[in-house]
Every structure is written in C-alpha cells, then in structure tokens.
Length: 198
Image (tube, rainbow, N blue to C red; front, side):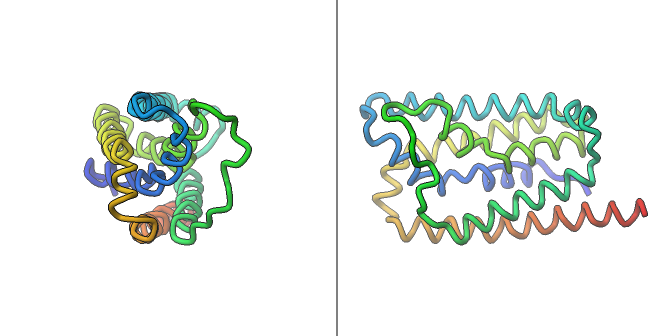
C-alpha cells in the first residue's frame, strides 16, 4: 500500500513533533537575544531539512550497504516510532538534554535530534525505499513538514503563553496517540511481509 503525499506530510510533522519541541526551544533559547532567536530557529530547521534530504537521497544505498530489507526497516521504523509515541504520551521532564554548554545552541540538540531525530530519519528512508521513483514528491513533503515545524517554532513563546504547559502536554499526547497507530501499522506491514516470505 503506497503512502500518499498528504499522509507523508502528516507523518513527518508528527515525528518532527514541533509542538512537543516548544518547551525545549523556549528553554534553550531563553538566553539568546530576541533578535537572534528567529535566525537560530530558521538555521536549525534548515539543518534538519538538509539532514533529512541527505538520508532521502542516500538512504537506499545505505540499506543496500547494510544488507537491510524493506521488511526489517518497516519493523525497525515501527518500533522507533512506537517508542517516540510512548515518550510523547508519557513525557517526563527528566532533563534529557542536561549538561549542555551555555550560549547559543548549534545543531545539537535542536536540529538533531529534536527535529530530525531517529524517527524522522527512519520515516524518510522508509518512504524512499517503498517508492524511490517519488523522490521529488518526498522532497516536497519534507519541505512542507519542515515549514510547519518552522512556523510553529517561530511562534513557540506565544503558543506557550497562550496554551500553557497543560495545553501543550495535551496536544502532544494527542499527537502521540496518532503516531502510535502509525507505528502499529508499520509493524503490521513489516510482519505481513515477513510472513509472506516464509
């Protein structure tokens, strides 16, 4: 079953998790001058976009080099998405990014892994492995998902003030529930492919 363009955009937005990243961005950019925050957010989203494009272009070659099949990628991607979804549903503020250097963040942890994390990378590689002839379409889907993330993160402070911590948590849990269903579907497809091979 092919993934539609709209489904790809929605899945990529879910795994990029811009709403869930709002507290992280607000916290890590609080010591950055307000005039530079926009530039930092744009830069980090651009880096995340570039990382995902690189994996989209060379993901199939990486799979071939490692001897991985679509079935294993479906199952692995489903497991990763499921773990990310569980983290979204049962988020704990446990200082996961503790010990970071002071000053303006660069690449880590904003671009990677907050936006272009393991789930996003696995999703991109999986999309290309299923339909390599739709590379342009996947590129546009990645761009659209990054544009949504950029828009949300540019208004991160306003959204945080407007919705509040509980509102953000509720939105993230809802996105986590949706992503759980996507992860289960990926796992089922991988298991189905494995059973057919047997």
